[in-house]
Length: 380
Image 1 (tube, rainbow, N blue to C red):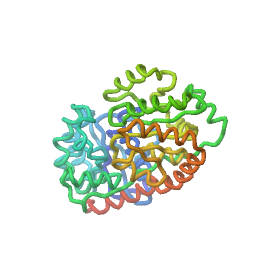
Image 2 (image 1 turned 90 degrees about the vertical axis):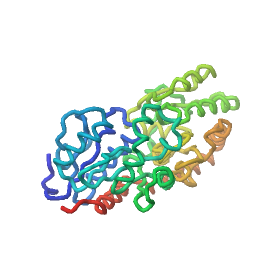
Image 3 (image 1 turned 90 degrees about the horizontal axis):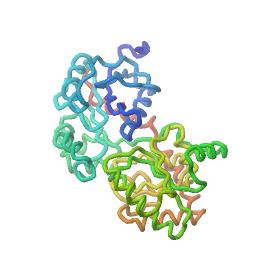
Image 4 (image 1 turned 135 degrees about the horizontal axis):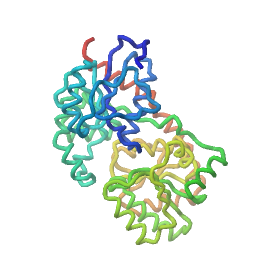
């Protein structure tokens, strides 16, 4: 239902297409959490959803109904066609497209979130069909947008260099951890989650889709090296199977790590804080990221975090993470062994991580996003 307290307020048409998957990716998490923050913000805006098919919007309360649009073709085609029709009908003050793709010709100012420039910098880390569908038009879409939002200074530098967008038109707005990401200290809760997922008392945690960019294969090779020193070392892997996941599963089998690698698949958000809190450390050795949700989520739950010393990850982790070369399994293994064998190091990283995570929040992200809307919005 429309919120009567916001009647007459400017309307933002908000892209909900990343929520089409029940098991949300990082972009889906960004879309959902940012919209929650925007709905709660005192900015006096109304929000209407843009989507090419019906969506389950549990936990979200749009202040105006979904913009009229019949179920349409695939997302990328629909954004260039059906979304434009919906925007002409609704006449919003601004439209925010949250996942790299926006209408090239839109009847209103457009804010486009570009999470990173990996399609340009690292095309081999993407499925060819995805690269082909988005890469050719990405520079044009970014340059035609009234403003571009990205999620780290590292990503901004890449976007400016690779997409030809002027620096003054790219605004860095950091993501935040979910409100439920906080340390879980109740032993019974930890024990219950660990038993439900069949996990040992000691384990490292990987959160991410099994695909080449996330470097799960490098983590498996590191685990094999580390187990030569500590045979009890184990890894829990949370996340769905993605593009080219087979190589990781084959490597697990060939190295005889079937009992040491616990593949949990998609895990309900309610279980993640306990898993983060229970693990020896989060290991996130991605090859490239625009942000890296597991870094701040793990830190917010009090977990030590091992992550890569490249792209945005060193920026997001700051001095609170254990940084290593993601292309060196030996370096990843050394980080795991250092934390497992040094309680003081682990405790120091936990304490620093909690302080670092507190610097990121969806409330701040929403407030800064509203500032971008105000700067580009069409006159009422």
